[in-house]
Length: 186
Image 1 (cartoon, rainbow, N blue to C red):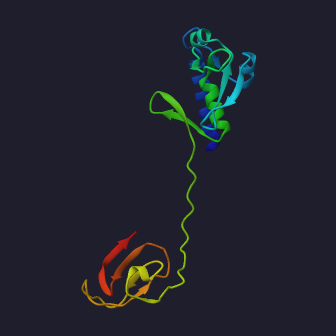
Image 2 (image 1 turned 60 degrees about the horizontal axis):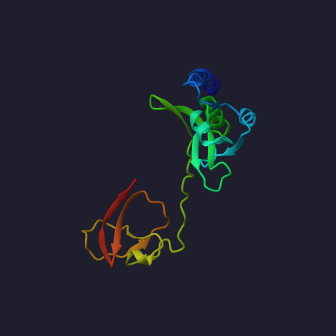
Image 3 (image 1 turned 60 degrees about the vertical axis):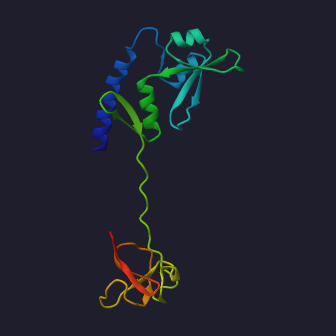
């Protein structure tokens, strides 16, 4: 399944690369670190951690004419910083190289996404005061609950401290020595 998906993605990338390279004339697109070096540029990591950019030593006019991004920097020898545009193929390859998924963002422009790490299931922690008699929630690590025969809310009862922090099931809560109501958690 993964091999078929990779083959489908690769064929889509080839078509997308061909399409992206046929943009307006005069736009400089960089496909690789080597191509950046050929332009006398520097391959630099971008702020998002996975995508690099090609910073080239072009003057402002040439930078803008070639479709690159210009940022004014007063202390720079040329007055700013020029970052050449990467082709979609180069961006997709960087995404895949860093473990991302290159996929369409809606109907128009593709994007790189990373699977969120799965959270480890919470382990129930056992309370040192488990089973101890109690009058109120603050008497226990994980709360004071009533587990006797059914009684009306507000009735005088004595509770026991909950054994774990596992919050599922139904509990009758004890507060100030009285049944304070019940709660059910999934």
